[in-house]
Amino acid sequence: ELKVEQNPLFLSMQEGKNYTIYCNYSTTSDRLYWYRQDPGKSLESLFVLLSNGAVKQEGRLMASLDTKARLSTLHITAAVHDLSATYFCAVDIGSGTYKYIFGTGTRLKVLA
Amino acid sequence: DGGITQSPKYLFRKEGQNVTLSCEQNLNHDAMYWYRQDPGQGLRLIYYSQIVNDFQKGDIAEGYSVSREKKESFPLTVTSAQKNPTAFYLCASTSPGRGAIEQYFGPGTRLTVT
Image (cartoon, rainbow over all chains, first blue to last red; front, side, top):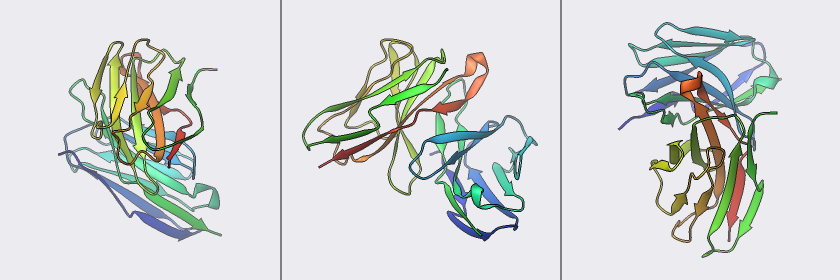
């Protein structure tokens, strides 16, 4: 069974601090996605990582993918309150079928 | 503007009634998906369709039905057989063949059944 696990599930951090969210998955896939969800809202695409070693950055967020370790990280640099949200990673099962499995989500709260 | 619309935003129904949630996209995407999200939880796949007139069950299809008669539309019916239908329902689309492999999500429908 394909599993996508994130840790931590909850993260409370001070503004200005750095932290990393981890996403582990149990199948071979070289396509991984990160999304953001604000409370009561839908999901917004953040990053698409398509190959081993891929790194993407947007503002204070940087995502990377290690397909050999089946691990993706979402690094937060100098957190600000506006980054408070739930972050999901997702993997598609490949083989020509674009079926996506989502992680459990990491609820991030940045304290002023 | 291109995007995905879901209606209604909020839906209230009595137990035992079937209810249909609408999802329409004008992105010309081939694939469409329905997910369920419970409070504080992740997304679980209900059904997905990669082409018109074809769809596959996801992980939690029991008590739900779908149709895909048009490329733009993928309605979801929550039947009375679904034991715990109260949840947030999200529709998404993607089009890998056209380079859009990440999913685009609609605003969601919050269904409450009492």
